[in-house]
Image (tube, rainbow, N blue to C red):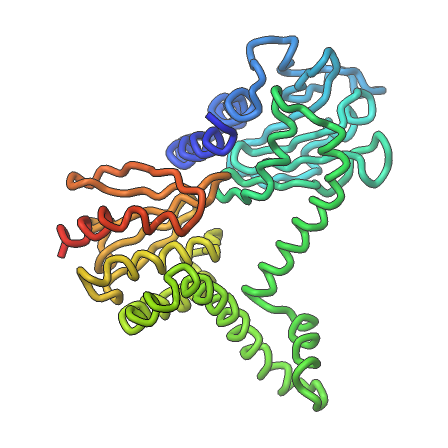
Length: 364
């Protein structure tokens, strides 16, 4: 399996088992060791590659241990400290990483709770671990742009220099993406003021701020939906889009509404991506010959977006598994058993049009 498939496999395991994992030790056995072995490719049972309970006496702190040291070419290259699944990744609870980072040859430190992985290096001061990670990976919501960087830390492709050289850019790009996502969800005063000053010539009073906070929020959501719709038009082609526009518009409108619903209390922690919205919109365009697009709805989860007929879990049409390094389209047979199909691009959903129409026809 390639690294994207290995990540997807581990993500499925985490989703199925995390509710039953209660301790740090159980987290290490169920999730962290499989990450080191399955994803990174190191033999966790070979002490020449992975040293559990790694000890390096540091000053008066003798006998302190780091959960795992990963060895490559006879040198400790990575240190891994694990917490219980669901626990916040608080650096105050990872003092060993700071101390050991300065006394070993390790240039990479990893703090994890089995689901989220924070990777650190020494960008700010040589041989001293940074306080902020350069890469943050959530296995239940994987940013596929980070997968090539993770590949560089695997046993077969280990390239420490490349990782460290790219770390600063990764650190700030990741931080900027998180800032932009937060502003699109809930714009703060500075963001509202900056955009308002671009379009409004009057004084930025409290009344104006309150007015434009709402307008900025609406504009942000409409902008995202417009970008998706433009990509859908291009995918369908101008003639095909013109022929089906009336029936597909309700599906597009539902997708626009979904962007707003992403902020609802019951969807915290779930991020609906542009690719998921675009993939969802393609399905009503395909099955509009069988049912009206307004009957096709989606429910997003942390690991996939489900597409249903009549908002009924007993009528699954497809699932979009886009939260890992690769994209998979889940299709259902007559017994409602799902089979995942790898797709390189979202447009490849059209290649499964006959199956999708048949599935909807059976329900309708």
